[in-house]
Length: 171
Length: 338
Image (cartoon, rainbow over all chains, first blue to last red; front, top):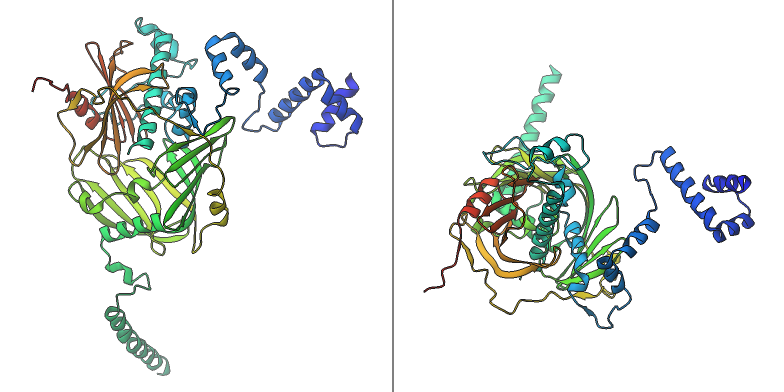
């Protein structure tokens, strides 16, 4: 086993590897898992900025447990023959229209620092969830639970995306 | 003795050459050739030349968008075939996000999700807002001033400032290439003259003919068109703003559903002044809002929320917070008893 791992390692390092061990890798799931882990380690060591963690398996497992999302995955299969696709089926993708338009995604909004120029209007100064200071501010407002905040952010994000969409489809 | 005489002779000859030359330039000034001659354009003329260039030329821009210390490199390729504009746009960093717009369609491509097409004649590419503005009409609300010359993306360029005449809109500084007239930089400024957002070209390539690759793209089959349902029942929002900033008109007034958020029904009004768009959403209050969470700002974009009894009003747009606030205050139900 250790020997194969070594071969894997050299494969990642772009060294020559025998065809046989490559085939073995392709056919062995456990080996594939090790391979991707090695790749990740390599990424970290080379300190690549974008670390490619493959969480597909976990996400798929999660999706299977959620009935709502399960229907979304079903859409792919019943792709209609016509060129026109039902709006509701594709709604999730409007997120793209917003992001390609080059505008606001909520996560960046939340982390936004309040600007100095305030003009008497209070600025949303929520530190990101899991951030250092957030528990204090959350405790300070018993009405504002973490969940409520999250729900509100989701809604505001939907508003921003709808704004982008309306601009694109305006007559 | 020899040196000064040589010098005076030189000056004399130079003067001799220069005087008729400058005269000649002034005489046949219809065909501008040199940069010096272009100085006769006014600020508004420069802006109008920029508009034409942005819509009619074949060019490729590499540019950076900078927003609250975040930089995003992007690419825009524009071409014209038989009076048809073709625009290709993409992000250069991170996940692949591209769009292609021509012939009344805009297609979006993103890594990991199926591509789709929307019916749209709306050009929303990087400089589109300043390139589609009616500057003559805009004189009511903006003053145009030539700031001076500079160098952007290695090109000699001229900076023109659009100063808002009131406090209800942002001001802009547009930098245009003196040779191609194309826009090279756009700063969005607030009342106190600090830069809220900046777009800056770092590479500009202008060609006589359309990029062959771009032309080829237009022959590709487009992704499926997504159909957006129009609500057939009473379409108006039932709400109205009793105050609008100068120059703003109501473009849209309807009720629709937030497809991205549980199909929540909203009353909707879209305002436009030729440069910025402002959306007003009126909906039922779902979550009580904390007092200090009324305003979110990112770059020039503002999202202002106000709750009134069971109603929540949201304003989104590239406007100062004070404008959003006043708009929300002015909202009222349309009276049906007339």
